[in-house]
Length: 320
Length: 217
Image (tube, rainbow over all chains, first blue to last red; front, side, top):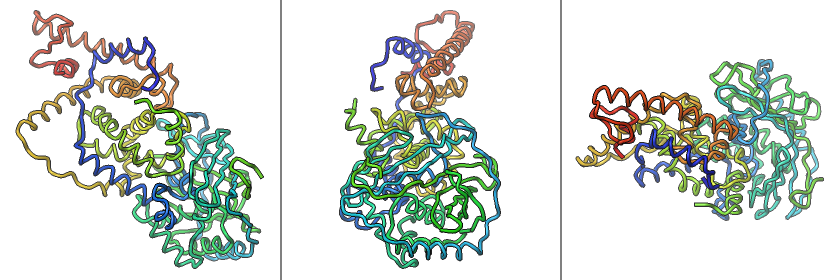
């Protein structure tokens, strides 16, 4: 396409195109293309939590919150294509434990109390939130499901609006450009009911169920942001109010740490947020199928993550 | 159409970061090519709009997997379109609710000339797709990308996540198969009409798929 084809390519293709030429040039009317674009754009923009002042102030960056943007898609569905890396292994099958619907609320309220009691970590304007995690997601390849190799992921999220984010995944650095800042991401009501209302409103209209969307949106914030204790407590209390949230007595994160999980099922796939049993610290996420689907058997692991470090640094690319 | 490497790298980074405006730009640039690819692959236009929507919804969902480096985003999109065409049921199930929200198409004005033109196009599409279906799926996918959508070997390899050597060998298998089909059809045509000789670009009144697709251009 963009690189000049080699001569043998031209010859081979020349014969092939004579043997079976492309049938005409099917085109959609301009107006219909516009309809389809409008549809796609409205679907993708309802799919993410957008801090309200971002909508008003920086129209160019309709972007999802940085946390939502970078991993949400992958975790929401658990299927990731890594065209540059087809390594990986067959996804492991884990034991599916029974979820306890009545225990989730009490547990999340204890997590909220622990979160509220934490000291507020000071962050200056112009500083960056650094989060290092270990992750593996399932790869969509032909008809089999595989899990890619466990690898490190480091993200630098600007604290203040206008900063440039950075990402380093499996050793590959990339510039995220001007991303939604941490300050904007965590600018949320500290009242759990208002918070949940806002999350439902912001995620309304996506293909998944509203409850599943709200769960995913909160999960994104837990994974990659730095929240004031009050807001993080409110998020846990809000999550406790999402219908269908259950407690799973034992789970393990990508770093091998065991904990208790809060989970939600969407399209036969359960997503867990894993917490330390005694400190209630957020450890990571895990997703797997809970029923046999066309994607795989019950128990097939589709994602595993572990947050290793969460810190404040002065520059993008700098490690604590 | 070559994009500056720097511009393209920034566009890729913006999409990876969830910048919807940048994604809209990519839709403007490539939706027509994705539509064309879908219609030709299916041999009809019935599902092609859904394939376009599914491809872009999937592209957005999978945006973090976009390589940070590279030129045009078309190979990436056509790779996703190939997966959508191959796993249509799975993709449809995932985006079922979204598909229901596609606005209905306005009625097409029924101008007689246009109807004739459309019928002719439809026959041509169906005939070419019938020939295409005689290739193995893997060969067919490479053929569609390299020959009809004109990706170079490296881009097709990137789109399908396979080595360039595999692209080459699949195309060569497609060529062998198509040559054999042409030979068979030609000898049949000669039996019907001994005056017909190879290489004249004609197709008989009941022209076979290969010729009908080619002869009417």
